[in-house]
Image (tube, rainbow, N blue to C red; front, side, top):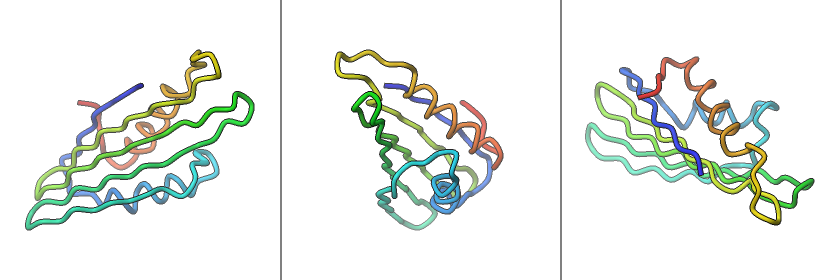
Length: 112
């Protein structure tokens, strides 16, 4: 499992940003599950996406938890799975997280 936390000092529509990311041919994640919780001055978005690796018969799961307030957006990017039959990882978890981090950096996010 790999996890990174990012923060933007702006209010961002993380759902729209991640839909752009997932629709890009570079990331190739299957259609994500999206759950939103909204209250006054607060929004939480949970996004779960999966990528299948046929070569090693494994699935990689990417979970993104975003909390939006009036003055900032905090995003946790968590990746798990991506290991082969005997539990050996070739770095898919780390690569998936770094790819999302790189994409979010284009929208003003920075690692905490």
